[in-house]
Image (tube, rainbow, N blue to C red):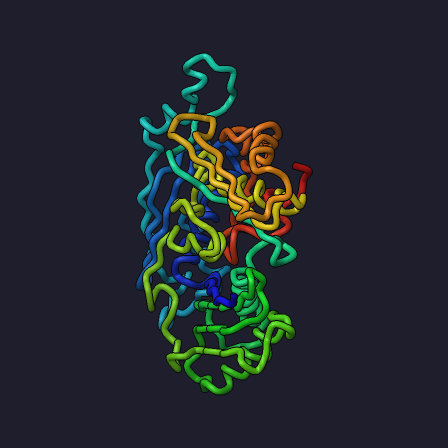
Length: 381
């Protein structure tokens, strides 16, 4: 049976990703000086303005958030207020308060500790359910559609920053459709790339350059054929972009951040949140578990759900789905997880070393599949 599946990625200059990057840059700046900082900040971008709002509780007192915001915008490459945004002239508004005491009372000391259990952990920062996923379609054990989409989007930024294609601007989007036969990816059916550009370039030059210097450099030739369809800047013009063309908001690209729609999603966003928020930390450990189940050949495909209650340290439930590909009973896989891993917030933070400022590295081109991130390492399970 043949079927098509599509995933999307965006460049670091997409308005939503700009906001994610600003929020994670603020988080990292606090963690550099206070590993115990509680950070939950969101960014809004639009029409030459940035708003940073949320809650931060930290012993670090000399963090200049406005400078962090401007530096992040500069790193992305936004320096032209006529077409997108200029880091030198944009207006920055701050609306930051401390973490709610009603939340802190549940996070600082877990319900289990209050009831006398021998658990040294904060309670979860919120209720929620998180998913992790892995499959054997790629070397990084990610689904092929999102893997290729991320690599193409990252290549778009690379050729811009290296002046390989010197007329590109930071905003851009990618979509990749893969044809599957009996659950195995066999070819690329469609590639869609929309990239912001300077006004003087003509469309045919842009199409040629994107095909030669982006697509052909990333997509394996054996996956392309005479029937592969290419849609490059299909509207014909993409000069106005970034926050000038569309507003941006932290946490609006949760499917881009995870598995491209190939696996389920609990709904929680990642960027701007410290790791007491299980939206982030539990999603990372769930990916770690799923990846290692596949890497250890306990299954060819694995999806894991963890659920938490605010103020409670231990997960409420663990669910493992292997889609019939498991090589040992699923009950045994679950038992191994319980025996090997501490899935309390403190257990996850310590195991993955999540009090270090690594989160700017996660923001763009997916939070999973990057081998240098601690939840991507292979262990025996």
